[in-house]
Length: 348
Ligand code: AHM
Ligand code: MG
Image (cartoon, rainbow, N blue to C red; front, side, top):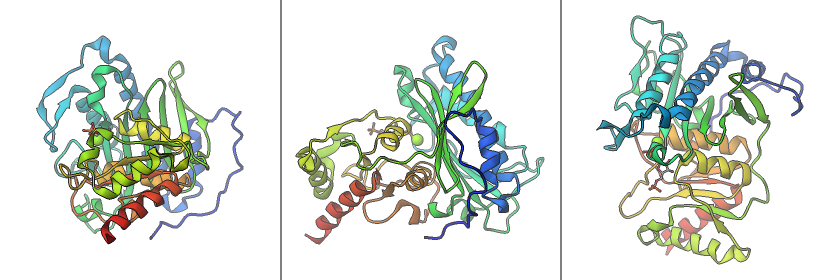
């Protein structure tokens, strides 16, 4: 797996008790990426601004009476909610004019979005799902934004499809924003995963979860929409049955149905989240470029792993922007166990 070169840490470890804003943390992180020359930290900083704008709107959603669908469908054929439109717009407007990006890829747009000619173009690509799990908004369940940053590989000033279809191993940073009981931004630049909680009274993301590691041994929980069990392949069914029978040890089930929230719990507590392929969705439901790959980079940087059942998600080269993938993500031992069950099935 090809990984961008990283320099050794050039900073002292920060004690949890210090008050560290996300901006300060990103600047210090940049010392580990001298090749990024400021661009990288500015992209993350601009994203944290968009996160605050979206968080404010999400928190106000009921009051502003903006819940409900916006009346059209996105490229996946799903109803677009007004907050999706707002989040798409907030991220686009925070990023389009900065001179850092050449193009963007969003779940809400069919094609990649070149930076308009009126603005300077940069060397980076932002891929994002502006508001994942938005069907949960109406019932006040946590939702999230997922993003990753790639470096341009083509000679096209404003990016090309090839720039957007790089494998996850080429991501130089990835993260998510969770709009939950508090708003959190979690990111990795390849080494270490760090979580920041928004203090709404001062409008700052403060480092609250430094150096997140997926616990080992993990919490004995699995996360999957089990209503689809009859449609799963025999290997996936056998894997989940094995966990239910305890793998000897008594597993419990946790499923919110909102990817960022389910992943966040898995990252902090351990266990496994899976959204496998099934008879109805032969490629799974989740998207490789802006959902599975960013979360895979985070999982691996936290000591976990992510697989499509056969290979590491980070090794899969996308063939289209909105390609779907099965996803098994979380504690390494459980992801490996899932792969073994899937492999046994194809041998039998
Ligand atoms: P979305 O991108 O249309 O919001 O859908 C993705 C969501 C994820 O947040 C979640 O993991 C999954 O769909 C839940 O799907 P299901 O309802 O089939 O369990
Ligand atoms: Mg989504």
